[in-house]
Amino acid sequence: MIIVQHIHSSHSGVHETGMLPQVLLALPFLLALIFYISCIVISKRNERSWPVHRTTLWTLGILCALTAVIGPVAVQAHGNFTLHMLGHLLLGMIAPLLMALAAPVTLMLRTLPVPAARNVTKVLKSKPMHLFTNPVFASIMNMGGLWVLYTTNLFPAMHEHTWLHILIHFHVFLAGYLFTISMIYIDPMPHGYPYLYRGVVLVLALASHGILSKYIYANPPSGVASADAQTGGMLMYYGGDAVDIIIIFILCLHWYRSARPKILEFEKKSTGWKIDTP
Image (cartoon, rainbow, N blue to C red; front, top):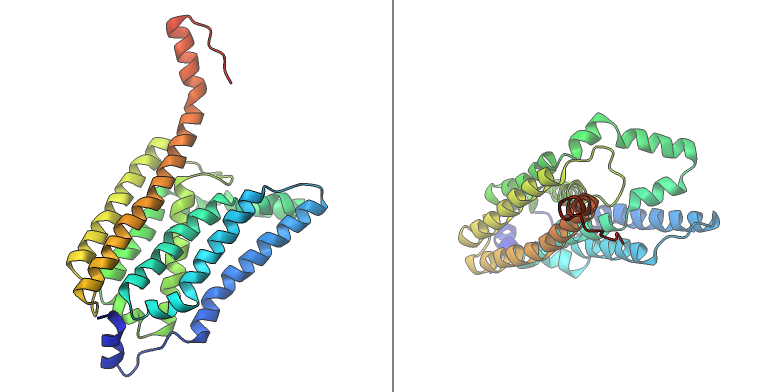
């Protein structure tokens, strides 16, 4: 049956998914929702509207993250690997994508006073941010973290220690968000990387994610029953593909739009035809 029944029965020091870990994990997301809504209110007071669809995306992203860290799914994920993997998809892939598409940095920069906005811009242009938004670094943090989690004793350990449980959940979200914004640029990105570079790294990262899901299918993490690992591995494989398709589509769309003026210019020179630009 399932993960942590085994772990719970064999370790006296096992922690339960009580209220405290859930509150600590949920609090940053609730604050993020309040901050985002507050920025919209201030922006409207300054007679600057904000797209409704971006607010909706941010809210949905927060709800996905909250579903993964509090409530029935979060509690049962502690003892059911399939639900654990559902939580992984919600927290590490779907929520980061939705929240990145909500353009929170753009909203913050247009809301803050000019001096504060300049300070934020300085942080975005800093060398550490240059490193963090490098697709290779973000992929290593994201995919590398998952490989370490599911192929070592870190996975059973996170069910024994509350602090490790909280730390890993924060890492899963932050690494997923970093990975998403390093691939698709919705917000201003002072240290932008070429499309080809991002595309190659993205393909390698997706391959790593697919291989890991198959590895889990054949080699259940410690304490996980084979059938549960197979279901969880398939959910990771196909669920991850669904999210990855959206990221690939957005990256290719941006790439096409950036290259379209050059394509039109080349066609005009090569054919001598007059081509109207939209």
